[in-house]
Image 1 (cartoon, rainbow, N blue to C red):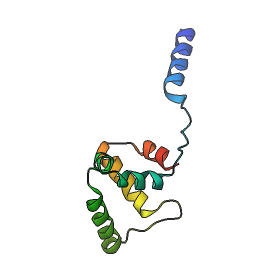
Image 2 (image 1 turned 135 degrees about the horizontal axis):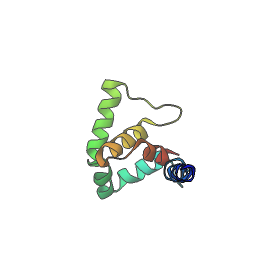
Image 3 (image 1 turned 90 degrees about the horizontal axis):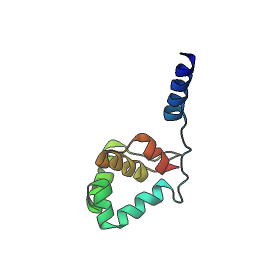
Length: 100
């Protein structure tokens, strides 16, 4: 019985507790967003809108709703990450991985 409990505990640990380290991206989240915005097809695939629509949305959010950059993330990057997460059902962990 003890051996079975130990084996089950080890299996649970390996399956759920042994997490790999986050990857380190070659480009920042801001660089990824601006590069994606510059490519028409990628922009639509990642954000589900064209660059012109992204720019209008960004302008409205800035002027009417006070969207601002922080010391850790630009407002363009924040909007891009938000749209990417919503458009393709990405997790917060994946977005954090992109931001690193």
